[in-house]
Length: 226
Image (cartoon, rainbow, N blue to C red; front, side, top):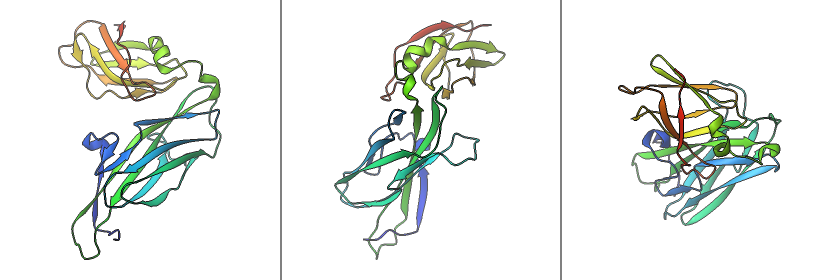
């Protein structure tokens, strides 16, 4: 078997795929890097009978061009059918110790084909959050801090400011009984804006965040400032 160069790259995020594609299974939808440790890890499993070439790397948050202070070991390897591998994520630089930092872990799986096969191959890339949590922030969690978020309506925009030290990832947001689309996250000390859905009146709203295990948390009920 050999890996051939004729392929299409598909983003797992674009397809709505979170932790599995084409037989390769990623052991989580996010990695929380414990700042008290030198490294974190994530499992990559191939239950298929055919091997894959796995390539992994870490990106800085969107809009930042600096190199991410992490290395993946191994960064490129062949994963045989029925096998799994543990990727080590090693911190190589200094990060703020007074707040969480967000990065993106990319894992690309390239399928194999027989040498005589000229079939089109599809490489799929999964992108998951890598959140560095300093050791002195282990006493709390994003869920426990979520009620400190400040919400405000500004015209057709819903604005959320995050005074906490944690990266807050949203699962769902509703305003005036209407679901807010394309919810994302808000970084520590930052502001994120979402489009207010048509017909969303008033200030009453609810939201859920995603916990460290990738599951939705409790429903928070708040009022947005007008």
